Image (tube, rainbow, N blue to C red; front, side):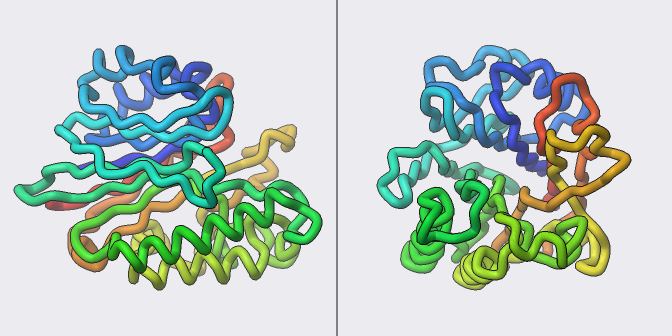
Length: 266
């Protein structure tokens, strides 16, 4: 079973890229973030035409938004609104995979703005609060107790080699110590397995995002690993493969994130 996560940065604008990716890579499930459209405007017909007939969408006008499209039947589990902000940042489904149910959570964690100081930057304060609530919810609801997968743009690069320069980014939102600490607490709350680092050792560079600000993103290669696939302990033995589609960053009118696909042997 192949599960892809991708911050698409406007699904309607970049639907041709989604179609191309699905035709050439054919994951069983794709989880999209930052869809930036209301549920009624989501391009469901395009996905169904490619065999992704089962959809769970949580959108809003112009901002945020998450969606799951699956070849396999899904049952909607949840749409959490953390911090009571009214943001569409989470959707969860249950999938029958390998003869048993698997829960799949798709998240878009707030980016946090530019200033890493919650006393002067409400967006950063919101990000930290979101992570705190997310962690407590995972504990309380025992989200990772069974066969569970958590994917998405978590907007934090936690490890030294998840960024192009650990030293240069210590005071840059997405790699600050307080963000990393809170993300690690969330990891610990579910005893999650960082599936990407099962395939790429922590001492090797691994990126999923490259800024639009770079005149030549590939040459400068100043990336960050903001996108994650976490699996519960029950699925640790099922991890079978990883693909980070770096080439997608070079497509015409790309997202600044690339698709990440994890394969499970179920």
